[in-house]
Length: 270
Image (cartoon, rainbow, N blue to C red; front, side, top):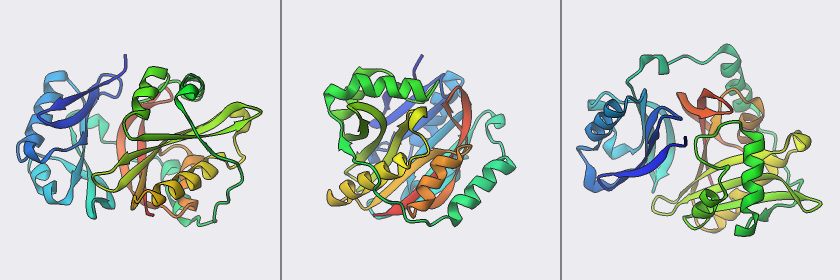
């Protein structure tokens, strides 16, 4: 059963059993300073193991006073103000260290500054592509934190400030990615990068990322960030090579590919 998106006060929250968390997507100023406590109470009421919140610097202390800790920071994420991913661990088993392999992936990705090249033609995807996009996401990810295997969900996202891009070979979609735009804060999350197994190792994610960042910069977005699986050398290298900076790791944060995983935050000034 996928997690749901709802309002707590006026703030937007994603919550449910799949990711076993309460995730504050968009904070509304009208809900401060009481929002941290409301999120904590919601998580305890639902029996969730973790709360994670995207918080501007000006409200960081209010969350810290409620017991939240900063797991990752994105410079200038919120209309020029630093943004923090702050977490409250209700189930302390969710606060786990990185493995040596995951730490090595971060080190190698930080050291890699090989300039990517636009090796593949990238097109903007349209509503007519939604079914094929959903099939691709279902093929690549046994589980995913959002219901991307549902074409109706993709259509909803398309109508709500998300641009999808893809690479097609012989008319078939073989790779895709999304730019989730936050116009109020002039930042964009690069997400939903997926490539069919038959076309991996060809630099398609790098081509998608380069194209998406160029399009978003043209639209006036100033900061790009992503939340990437810490166990995947490939996806972390894509962002490291593209000049992104490592901002921190969200511990056992996301149910993806059939298990709960650590997620690395990478960010870049466009």
